Length: 195
Image 1 (cartoon, rainbow, N blue to C red):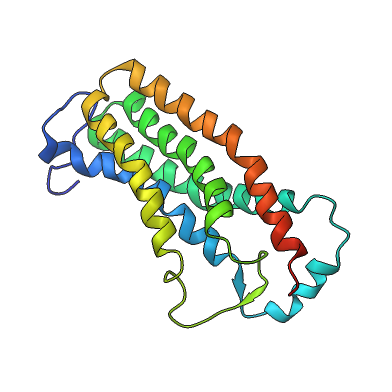
Image 2 (cartoon, rainbow, N blue to C red):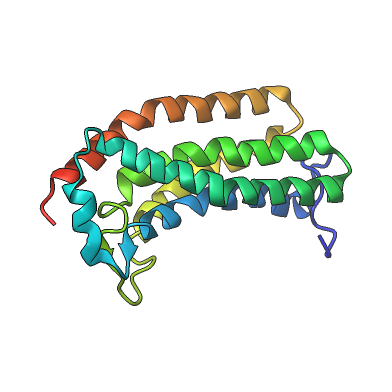
């Protein structure tokens, strides 16, 4: 904001001015997988037997609940902050709301994808390890970043078109509909895996 390089991509097409706001949307989305990964670790991992001993009919619900908590406590405030910053900088609350909503809509499928590819254990069941906070998640995070790269390019090229916003929302919703069963199957395997 201070450098003047935070222009509204809906009204401006100069890449020097719109790169940061476009990247801000996708950085919120890309912050989700490392958080999901780290939710498996705790200093009280020995108490995970309480969770494993619970009569849980739907282990996938545990993962989805963890992802919903992440959305409510981390992603939603980040998107609200993005909205406020964009609305103040652009003086266009509609465009700011579109960008914040896009970050939120794409974060949910990213959370489900993270349950599928980066979660190494049940929530709060693994001991913390120094230096292990991002190491194992680097390759899946790179793959998820590569998957978002074309969306970022489309955002830059077509942010002025309502079709981009409708297509991005439809893609996010479609991914959110396709990923839960696969994420649930992954949580089911983690649940059955011996501690």
